[in-house]
Image (cartoon, rainbow, N blue to C red):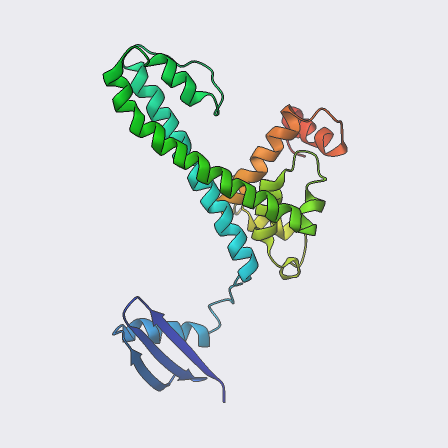
Amino acid sequence: MNHFAGLDVSLEWTSVCVVDAEGGVVREAKVNKSDRDDARGIAQLVRANLIRPVHVKTVSSQEKRMLLANRRFMLKQLCDAEAHIRGTLRNFGLKMGKVTRRGLEARVGCLVAERPELARLVAPMLRARSALLAEYVRLHRMMLEAARADPVCRRLMTVPGVGPVTALTFRASVDVPSRFARSRSVGAHFGLVPRKWQSGEVDRTGSISKCGDAMMRSALYEAANVLLGRTTRWSWLKAELLSEVVYGPN
């Protein structure tokens, strides 16, 4: 006889409910939780085949995602710190202008050289920024090493416009390619297919659905911008992309 189990999990308690093929409750138990009704509902949904299996990514892909997320978080904090320093100096009429990331600290030192009190106030922000920069560089190097060590990433980076960030993000997001029946299913998984409104004689095609992995869509968008703006070598991929930009998708 088939049995179906539902577990409602939280930080403190878990409620377990097991039902048979007819929907009758066979066994209930509590392990540090009290939501019995939620567990019963989940078990009934499993019995009625209303819950589809969810792919759990491999540990390797989860580690790659964590590396990418940490690098992105550190970069955001670094940019926020630099923007704050710029904004603070601008309030005193001091403009840094265009400056490289390595030359920012020296530029700030020149601007506040004759204002010791302002230099004392800016110094903690510069120290914090220096620590953020060091950790970001460390995470960035770890990301580069992970991309170089993966043969799939190395192959993806042969595509014009695709760098280590896009390649590693794609590798971690797809995880196991065999779970997709068709290659087109990957685009739908990332939310890159257009929305559809169909009712009677109405059949409208909207913008992309934006369902799924936002980090992957962001990486692909950046890769497309690199292909259009920075990549000088001509390729069929660039020609296809330019035709869609000019004439719209077919």
